[in-house]
Amino acid sequence: MFKGKAAVVTGSTSGIGLSIATAFARQGADVVLNGLGDPAEIERVRAGLEAETGVRVLHSAADMTKPAEIADLIALADRTFGRLDILVNNAGVQHVAPVEDFPAEKWDQIIAINLTSAFHTIRAAVPIMKRQGSGRIINTASAHALVASPYKSAYVAAKHGIAGLTKTVALELATHGITVNAIAPAYVWTPLVEKQIPDTMKARGLTEEQVRRDVLLAAQPTKEFVTVDEVAALAVYLATDAARSITGATLPIDGGWTAQ
Ligand code: NAD
Image 1 (cartoon, rainbow, N blue to C red):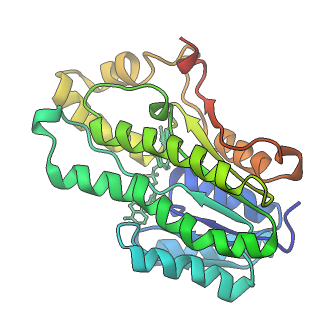
Image 2: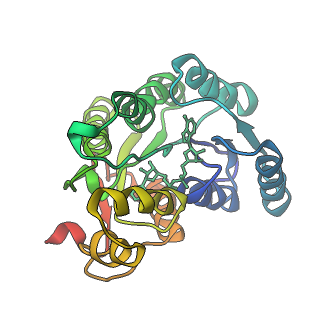
């Protein structure tokens, strides 16, 4: 479906980003993976994906808190593939604490990775997409782009910011064949969710089972975690020609959470 096209997916060494990058590679796009982790494990994933799909797969360790490294990530795709058709802003981190105890450096880190990095990738990618007269920008937002939960001040602020950035850039690019959308999943079972269980247990004085049932899945009417494959399938759809009239949207994939 995307043969001859090129995709960059930030934060794609794990979880949702890896699933999205895998889905684009399986549909024929050359892919630049990005993210942190054990270099040997990342190389195993990169080489495995390339062998399985036959597309070219690169990895960039660009740190999403560093604007110069973010610019290099986009330049790498343009230099290697001569184009950039799909940009997925997915890198994200979480910290859970009451606002008065929220460490200022955690606030800065979450805003940088979950929001500001998307500004930097977009500003570098737009000239390339305008040159091509087409492009797809897909931001992994969250149900927390639409509603809030306590103890996640930085994350909720960043995700609401992503929804605003999505709308603004969609308007600016509407006549250039470039769409800009955000995907807003509820809880997806990934390392990001698993890691916040101990802090949530501490912040709310709950057991692990209570955090899963009474916090994570409390607002999800289906009482099931969303899967990474479901999120990837929506990203693939948004990148197709059939989705050309969808732009500026923040699309929930949340088992009914935000319908309440
Ligand atoms: P994850 O922890 O599995 O993956 C996060 C990715 O971001 C990893 O590849 C990691 O290396 C990368 N990353 C972190 N800091 C980075 C940095 N400084 N520079 C470059 N890469 C960095 O998490 P996930 O659950 O797959 O989350 C992916 C996205 O989905 C995030 O934006 C998250 O907010 C969003 N999201 C997740 C859920 C969920 O329930 N898991 C729900 C809604 C939205």
